[in-house]
Length: 398
Image 1 (cartoon, rainbow, N blue to C red):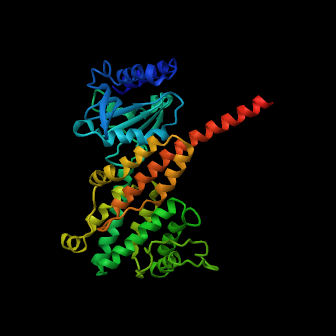
Image 2 (cartoon, helix red, strand yellow):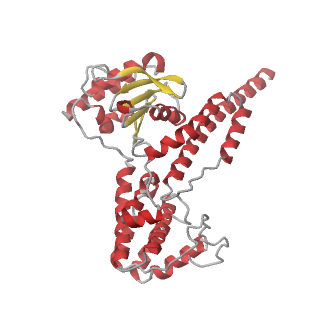
Image 3 (cartoon, helix red, strand yellow):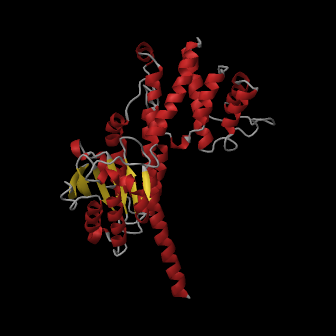
């Protein structure tokens, strides 16, 4: 079966090269051929609908293609930057309900497929070029008429679950040793910040924290090394020398209270395994469930530290934050309006008075950054037009 799909995919790739790549005139033909490659007669036979109406706020929009319970596809013309259209696709998805709120969303410009699952993560599950579909078609296997498990290269949910599991093992090991729960939770959170910092470039060099962990496995102690590191991360004054000289100050008070803890060999083994994960691919919106798993019901009730799911969070921030700002973005027609709107966005404050895992604030910040990207994209278009106009004026004068 796989060989037959590969053969059909190769024919599809060859066919796409004959297309000009116009969204309005060729998108439906492109998608029909794509579904044929995965064993369907066409999109209609698969159960899909073109130009599906969706209510976005007070306005009616049209999704390019909807296959209920499975996928929304938003097509763009060849050469269009897909990054600048993520917010539009997400707006359609956010406004969908029931079977029309599909697990998968695809953004496509004839040459690139960006696959999303916003139930799971913010970043694309995968990005694949049309010309590479012959060897990478499994990333679109959910389109197949036959049940085939898709394979994604950026499935952060799986990475996140594995990372959570290792940290929780350290947590429970410390609990068994009789350490104070509150102190352990703060310690685990401090480790968590270090793990993220290593893979997003906030430490002096790549592998900085992993090297500390390995030194502790040899002849050093986390009681000494981690305590010294945390103190420097809490200091606004740069160290004048030594191992932590180039460590930055981390604000927010995460390292204000430091409890020296000595990890045993088993816990260091787990931490080394955890540090080897690519933490830039760990999704903070999923990671909040570490609160749920790390505390018993009595403790959760006492502290109020519950993890709020992203779906519940979006029910609040979509009508109160995203939609009103998005309306302003669409109405901003001049460069001056857009610059002013970006300035206003930077002054916006989001309060979570019952902050437990912090997931509400994280999702709100992420959506605000997505809105900023939309504004910056429009600003960039205005600047390009200005540059072209300026060059034309120079050319005319010459």
